[in-house]
Each structure stands twice: as C-alpha cells, then as structure tokens.
Amino acid sequence: AVSRFGLKQLSAEQRLNELTQSTDPLLRAFAIHRLAVMGSDAMKAVILQNMEYPHVLVQESAVWAIAYGIEQEDVRPLLQSQLNSSFASVRSYAGRLLEEID
Image 1 (tube, rainbow, N blue to C red):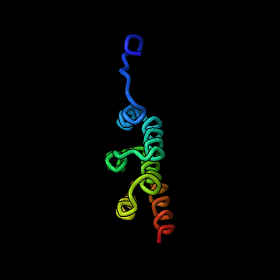
Image 2 (image 1 turned 135 degrees about the horizontal axis):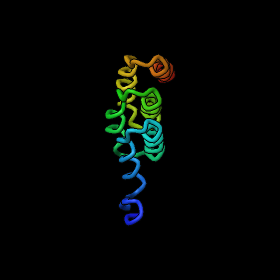
Image 3 (image 1 turned 90 degrees about the vertical axis):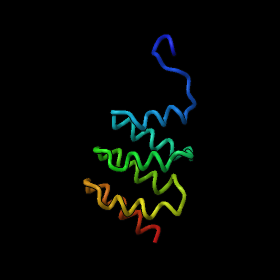
Image 4 (image 1 turned 180 degrees about the vertical axis):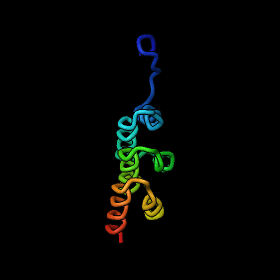
C-alpha cells in the first residue's frame, strides 16, 4: 500500500480518526459513525471537531455519536449545543434525543 498508494499501515481506529478530518463529508460522517460503534476513546474529541462542520450529514452523524458513543454525563450538554445548529434536521434530531433521555 505504501509503494502503490502512498498509504502507511494504521490501525482501524487511527485510519478512521484520519478520515474524520477528510474534506469529503460522506467519508467524514462514516468515520464518525464507525468510531462511535467501536467505542473509541477519542470519540468526544472527534464529536467536538465535527459538531459545526458545514454539512448536514456530518452534523447528524455527530448527534448520533453523542447519543450512542460517549459517556452519559456528556450527552445532555452536547445535544443541547446542537439545538443551535444551522440545519433544521440536526436541531430536530437533537431535540428528539433529548426528549428520549428525559
């Protein structure tokens, strides 16, 4: 892979963390979702880096990861911050998840 594509060998978590910085919103959203499913230790940092990314799919993935991929004590304040998103679907999704945890 190094000689053909210029890619060095990384663990799945390292590669996914790299993809959370991609300029491609689909790759970014996928990586956020997979890291949350894996239970990555870096999940909160990844969420914070992507909560205001200017693409609805990335922000929706961050909201999903907030609800299902981080420590419970962090969920409410992070979801509440997404109620101010510029995307209506993100605001709605965050609001529904907040109702579920009440």
